[in-house]
Image 1 (cartoon, rainbow, N blue to C red):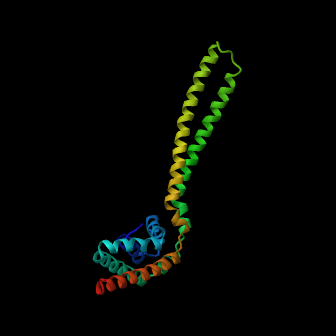
Image 2: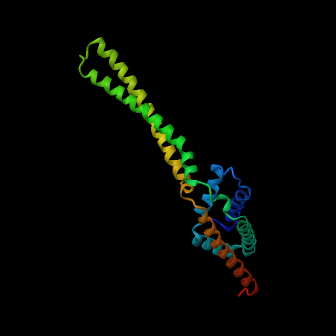
Image 3: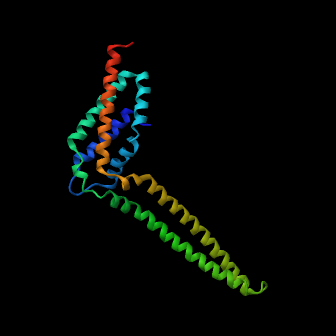
Length: 207
């Protein structure tokens, strides 16, 4: 649940990106900031609920924070989202997570190869007498291969987790559309104006 002050700070970062956007496009961090703002602030019901709690604690502080948020909303409206309309957010997301996937796939190929080599050695052991030097030599080689596979498998699992964690962390970039931002800010504008009006009414008639 984000406070009005936190939303204002986040929107300030959004406005900074919008005002500095050029034909060269946006960095991944920029797209994450834009999309995360929509993701984190789209639950307007929780924002209203948080404001209701805040007004009971410190109405003056809430009023100040809300006025600041309204100022950022006006800056957003002035900047608009035309500059980010051409941005391919899906492609930026895919390019960001691609190295994570490639590291996982490379590790998986290595561990798969080690398993195949270990399996081949293990199968050869099955046909050798236990008391022969050849068996002892091959068994040691088999154990070493199995150890190498175990280490590689653990690394593969870690890289898979890293890949999936990063996908989940920034998947909001993939689904983001500039229109989402415009719609959300319009809703936030209505909320801030209502909060300001309610606080002023309370101050005029504290009953």
